[in-house]
Structure formats: C-alpha cells, structure tokens
Length: 227
Image (cartoon, rainbow, N blue to C red):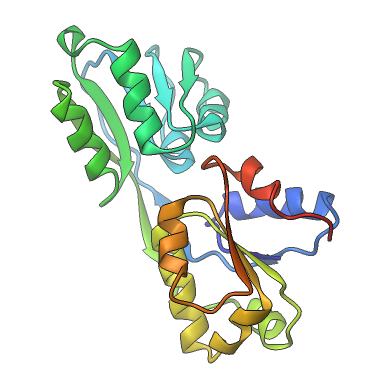
C-alpha cells in the first residue's frame, strides 16, 4: 500500500494500514516545514484548513473551526479547547462558518500553507466576512520517490496507492513517470480523498480509481477491503 501523504501524517497512516493487515510503503510527495506566524491579530474565530496548520500553532483562547475531524483532533492536541469540525473539505468549512458566524462580529483568522486556501478565503469574503490569512507552514515537493518505494513498485508488489491532495497526487505521478514506473499503474488501485484528487489521477490507466465518500482518511480506508 503506497502512502503519498506528507510526514508526520504518513507515519500515522502507515500505522493504521499495518493494523488492518496491509504492508505500508512510504512515499511522501511533499515535505512540510512549519513556519509559525508571529503575533496574530484579534479575530472572532480561527480557521484551520489542514492538520499542518494546526500543528504549527500554539493554542490561545479562540473558537476554532477545523476543516475535518482529523484537523480538529490536531488542534485539540495543540491545546485548543473550543473546536468544531466541518465535513472534510473547504466547501463544508465555508458552510459551517456561514451557519455559525456573523460577518459583523469581527474578522476570521485563516492559518494556511504558503500558496494554499486562496479559494476558501475568497469564498468567505464573498459571504461578507473579512478574512486575514497568515502563513503557518510551507510545503515543497519531495525530489524523488524513496528507493524502497521505487523498488516495491517496480517489482509489482504495490497493489494500492493512497492520494491525499491534488498537489501531492500530481507530484507522485511525476515521481512515477521520472522513475520509469508508469507501467505499474494498471496493477494498482488508486484511492483518492476527493473528486479533485481523482481528476488529477484520471489521465493514468489505473486498475481502478476509488473516491472517498467524505474527504477524510477514515472514509479512504473504508475503500480498501481485505489485504
């Protein structure tokens, strides 16, 4: 089972996979580097669109709106106590904010990765919210597949691959192509966390592409069946 998720999430997913009886093969497509922001402005709520955002912050008393339950758990682990989770994607986070928050009550603080979540910010602004974006981490592409992953794929040992974001999926495909491993795709089931990820994967001849019914890891793992 190829895991393309960045660390530290890749190790967490590997543990889940191993507990289900699969053999995890780590191939993080992105490398995340926390960039904790300096002093933050007052806001009515903190919005967290990813676990990486949550892990880069130190808690303070503020309501937190997380994109999904995994991000909410990461926020609680950092010490945030007033945490609400959306359904796993930016659209559900936008709906949650629209239902529970008032544009007149103050700005929303959006902690993001460098270059990420512009669409989320724009959608909230279109609803009348003032959104303050602050960079919490940077994500760069890994230079290549890890040798162990390339060997396992080349030997036909990898039957499934998990893809967690459009950018990491595109990076993983580039790694496979550069490693001369495009021909392995017909023997692999690609599991996408969302339709947007599946769209990135669609140009390749996978055995099949499965899409999680909700954009979180639990619903991805439901698609695995037995090892």
